[in-house]
Amino acid sequence: MGTLLHFKNIYLAAFENCKPELAVILLKIYSFFCVAMLAMAMYAFAYRAFTGFRF
Image 1 (tube, rainbow, N blue to C red):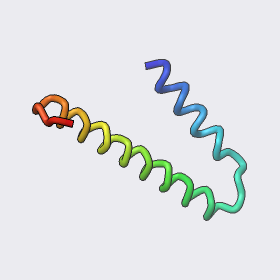
Image 2: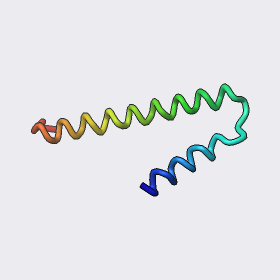
Image 3: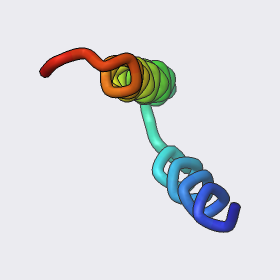
């Protein structure tokens, strides 16, 4: 759990006092998009690995 809090602190510190505000909003949206894409890729890999898909 400490690792997640550390990543959260790094994420929040990256956007402190960052201008322009529109760029900050776009970067936050993009970072959540990247996390979602990574999660879907890991899910697809795990699904194929556990259902016997031949790579």
